Image (cartoon, rainbow, N blue to C red; front, side, top):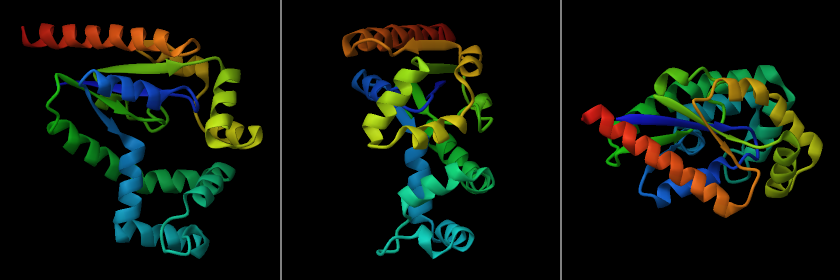
Length: 201
C-alpha cells in the first residue's frame, strides 16, 4: 500500500486538496479528525486534559472547549507539547489501523504537523500544499474569522516554509485558481497510481 503524507502550513488548502483526492476515489485519513474523536470519546484522555488545563477546558455540556484549548496551547509552548505528547501516540496507532483497512489503490493521510511531530517514517511520499506566507495568513484569517496575531501564533508553532518545502517529495502550489489546483491534484493522482502499478508489476 502506497501511503502519501499530506501537509502544509495553516491556510494552505490541505482540506480542499484532501477533498479533491476523495473525489478521485482515493481514501483520505485525517489526523485532526482522529485527534478530535480520541479527545472527545476517550474518557481517560478527556479527564487528563481537564486535570491539566482545569475545568475551563470543558464547555457547559462537558465537551472539550476547542477554542479555549487552541488559544491555550498556542499561547504556551509547554502546554502545546504536553497535549501533543498525550494525543500523538494514540493518533499514530489509529492512523496505522485505518491504513490497513484502505481499499483504494493508495491512500492519503492529512497531518497538519507532519514534520513537527516526526511522523515522516509513516509515509512513502510526502506531498506539501504550498502558498506564499502572506496568502496563507489572509486565507486562514478569513476561514477562521480570526485576527492576524492569533493566526501568526499558530504559524509560529509550525516549521517555516523553506524547511517544509525542502523535506517534501512533491509540492502543490495553491496560489492560483481552483481549476488549476484540480489539475495539479489529478497530476499527482496519476503519478501515485503509476507508482502503485510499478510496485505490483
